[in-house]
Image (cartoon, rainbow, N blue to C red):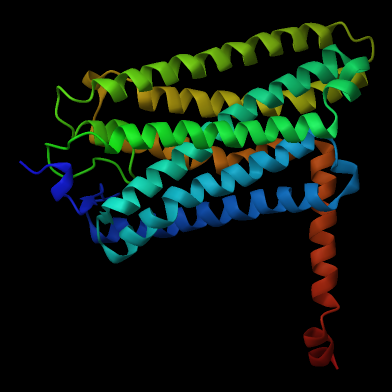
Length: 321
């Protein structure tokens, strides 16, 4: 049986068994990837360029869009390349790097979602203290803490996972390097440390989830006490998208990492992985822009500015003459 020192590459799970279906999935994933790049890119540009969006909530939304872009770019391009060229291989170093960056971005995103729930709690339940508690320095510190915690968290998991001896081959039953699938390759008596770390992580994430739920219970109670219908609508329009993003992210990620082995299958693992790696980064811009008028106005300004610059481009002016 091979050990980790003799493995130079891993074999990932193909997305389809037939060549025709592989090509169909390639074009589907390419469309999803481009939609995620466009949506998150527009939100990032709108928040960065529109002075009306230079507030704590949209500063965190900018960080969320950057994390979504990074997260989907860690897994999907390699999967698309393997699907297009009908290959399965990923190097040992490439697998470790993919696992590190994916866990880094996904952990930082969950930390950021927790911070965003606190931001909404302060804005709605303690509006008089919002300027003090959520000033620019505090926001920058919290965002940096989310990114830093994600990096440290990912480093621990990556080092722990790839320090295990791998005794069951090099075939990963997933389209990217995922911790549960790599643990299946390790010696059964040696992976207790990483299993304990995964359980600890799940408890930590569940604690953050409880914090988010408690925050939103207090938010909704405060919103229902608002006398103004317009104020209630504005509060719900900023809170409901965030709650939808958190629910989608957590439900799929928890199921992927905590489901019993008895309910695991190749098609189910692949479907769940696509749900929590591809769907949230693609839907987040849509969810936030649908319910938020300020984001839609900011995106509209960016698109109008881009179109006007394209129309005034010397290339078009020369060809119009």
